[in-house]
Length: 262
Length: 92
Image (cartoon, rainbow over all chains, first blue to last red; front, side, top):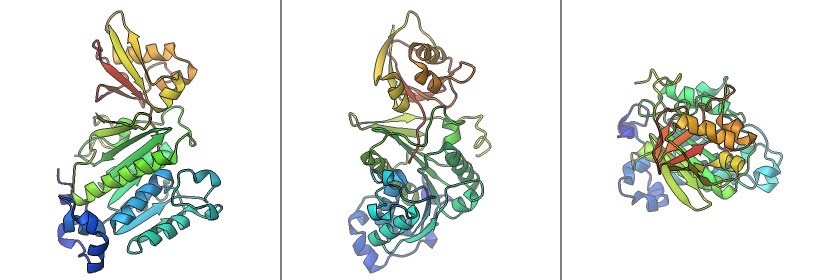
């Protein structure tokens, strides 16, 4: 598979060149085999939508900003609560009561001022999902509610955008990557609201930052072409015993969202 | 024959188990195993595993070894196989 050659991703011919300063900043990753200057240019030319910048999405945004992604589109409604601070590492104690996306913008700009960041103090909904997905080359789904995730999935499939999907619970985490036309979509795996899922659930910040960082790695892989993304595979991580395994997952030929996609 | 069942996330919390061995008198299907486990464990697990009609919930993820199977799959399990029950989870 060569994701960087598809229409979804930045065309190699239109990738933005690197400045001397950028070569210096990204020196450690420019030496990664299979990535190099072309991979860095691909990141610089790419944009990523992150649905919610809480524990998982905040870690993904941090790793992508540090890696030199060109543009981040961050969508998350509401103000920082004290109960966010065990895992939402873009938020700070003095930001409690203020918009999460503003804290995220400030922290990410401190980390890497070269990254363009567009913030939306709104969660993904029927009214904004199409325009949010259209604004990015790749989507990271880090939202807690399945209705938001299903909306994102549908829009990503319809627009032919890759979507990295991340999740967590207690000491466990899951991650997979959906490439339209190349494996299952979210609805293939979870066709409807799962019973018993609640907005608030037990988890450590170390789990959310771990899986958020892995989600960023998946995004980097898809956008730059390095490595092999988790397409058709679901990573299951259990930090109780530090076991990591991947499970092969199947496209559902009857999926209401992606069955007509080639 | 015996199969091993591993419980992930809320299924682990609902059963209080990371895994267990299930002794079977004869090979049964994934579909029937999920129903049997729902009867064996309490209402919290039953809510995760079954739909309103008492069938395996279509949004439950199930693996045999490292391969996903549909929770209502009618493939018979072989002795020694490992079944993982994975209720869907999200970010936050």
